[in-house]
Length: 173
Image 1 (cartoon, rainbow, N blue to C red):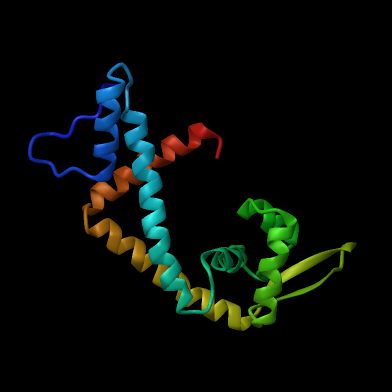
Image 2 (tube, rainbow, N blue to C red):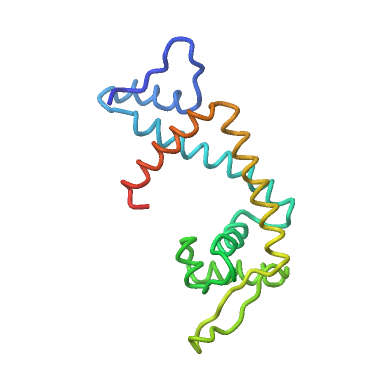
């Protein structure tokens, strides 16, 4: 890898400014990793804020969408244990309980005893939750689609998805 250089005529972004500053004070460093992960972080943050606004129209946060979406994509009967949800979403049990409490109060899911484990619970997506998450997922995908289409054609988007998959698989995430 070599130091980050913006080709002649290519607009610079804030990450270019950061890596250029490092090149001045530490010309011995290869800042390509910083350029890649800095852009990933900034994209995730910016698009995440847009998705938050899209989900807020449905009265839910991105974290609450994640719970509803996980139940929905689990397939019928749209039921998982709190432990399964927490593991999928990388949450603590306390963080999961708070989300479940709010979503249950809103009538979007229900909790019931696990018939196979006296100490366990089952979380089930309610009909209202199914309808809401189906609308919200479409709204979130539209935000993501708009961000991609503003800069990339379909082939570039597929190529980027493949490269990010390759990178993600090597990190153990």
